[in-house]
Amino acid sequence: MRHSVVFALVFAVVFAVAGVGSVSGDDAVDQLIKQVLAGAKSNSERAAGLYSAGKIAKDTPEIQVVLLSKSVEYGMKSITVPEARTTVRGAVELLGKVAPERSDEWFEMNLDLHRRWFRMCKSRDEKETVAGRLIELQRSNGSDCGSKGKWSGAVTAYREAYSVASMLKMDSKNELARDLRRATHFLGVSQKVDRYETALKAKPDHAATRTLLLNALVIDLDAPARAVKYLNDDVDQAYSTYVPLAAGAPGDLKTDVCRELGDWYYKALTPRAAQLSKTAMLVRARGYYQQFLDENTAKDVKSLAAKMNLSKIDKELEKLASAGMPVVRPDRITFHAKQSMAPFKAGKKFDSFPVQKDADALGPFSGSGVYFNQKTGKDVYYEIHTSRPIKSIYYKGAAIFNTQIQVLNPRGKPLAVMGPLKGGNSWAEYTLELPKGAGNHVFLKFRNDASTWFYINTITLKK
Image 1 (cartoon, one colour):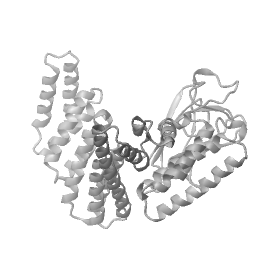
Image 2 (tube, helix red, strand yellow):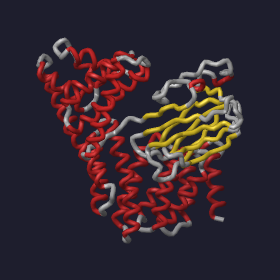
Image 3 (cartoon, one colour):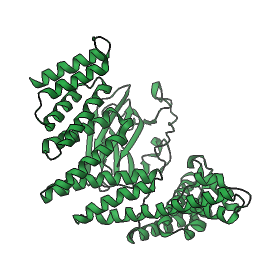
Image 4 (cartoon, one colour):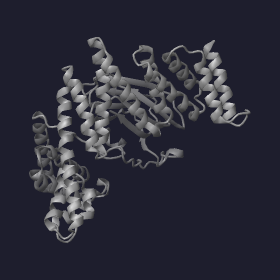
C-alpha cells in the first residue's frame, strides 16, 4: 500500500515538472518530500521512504537525485540503525549511476558512511567487513589521485587505509605501506618541482635550476609532456631530442626511434633514478623495446640487443618487486590465433583496431572494429596481463552467430562463460564477471561453432 501511494505521488510530480500540473516543478518536489516523510516515525523510515521514491522516479533523473540525496541526509542522521546504513549504501550506489558527473560528491558520501560505520562496529567480523570496504574506497581514491598527480590526496587516502589495515592486522597492510611510501615519495618530488618552477620563473637564465627541474620531471615524476616547455638551447642535447618524442603517443613513433628511446631510458635515465622512480624508467624502456620488436621482424643485431635488454629489465623489475618496491607493469593484451586470422601483430593493445582486409568485411561494421573471417572454425584467444586483478571484462561486438565467450586461467580452467550468443547484424554488449581471486593473468577465448565471421569493437577491463 505504501509503495502504491509513493508511486502515485512521484507520478504527479513528474507531470508537474513537465508542465502538466498547476504547481511549479520545485514546489511539486518539495510537496512530494513532505508527503513521503509525513507518515514516517524515525529518520531511518524517512530515509527508506525517500529511497523508495527515488527508485520509482527513474524516468526523471533530476527528481531522482533530489530524493536520493535527501535519503542519504536522513539515513546519516540515524547511522546507528542497520537498516539506515543499508539504505544509505543503496542510495549512494544509485546516485553514482544516475549522476556519474557528480561522482566526487557521491564518493565523499560513501566514504563518510563507512568511516562512521567502522567506528561503531561491535563484532570483529563486522569490523573487518566494513574495514575492507573502507580500505577499498581509499585505495581507489589514492590510485585516482596519484594518476592525476594529486599526491597530497593520495598520501591522505593511503594513510587512512594503512591505519585501518594495521589496526586490524589485515594482510593488505604491507601492500598499503608500499603504496603510502610511493605516494609520499612522489609528493616530495612534486613539492621539489614546484620550488624549481618558482625559482626558474624568477631567474629564467639559471641553467642549473632548469636542469634540476628537467631531471625531476623526466626521471622522478616520469612526466616528459610537462617537461617539454622547459627545453631550450642550454639543456643537454639528449633531452632536446628524446623528451618531445617521449611526450608524444607511442603509436606515432618510428621503429628505430622506439629502440633509441628504450636505450635512453634504460641506459641513461634508469641508473640516475631514485629507487621508487626506477620502476617507471624500466617500464618505459621495456615498452619502447617491445614496440620496436613488434614492428621489426628482422633477426638482426639490433633486435638481439633489444631482446637481451628486455630480459635484463624483467629481472630488474622482479628484483625490485621482491624487495618490496611497488612495481606497476603496463597492461598487456596479446593476440593468439592462426596467421590467416590475425588482424594485427601480437602485442598490440586495444587502443587501436586495424580491420583485416578481406572481401567479406562488408556492412555497417567495416572499419569499426577487428574483423574475423572465422569460416575455418578456429578459436580466437587474447592473453591478458594487467597491473591489478581483473574483476570483469566488458565486450562489444557485432554479427555474432552462435559464438561462445570464455575467460580461462593460464592453466585452461574456465573462470567465466557466456553464450552461445545469438547475435545478428547489430552491436551487442556483454559483461563477464570474474570470480574473486581470478588474478591479473587470464585468457579471453572466442569460439564460433557456426564457423562464420564477427567483429570485436571494444574490450574493456575492470580492475
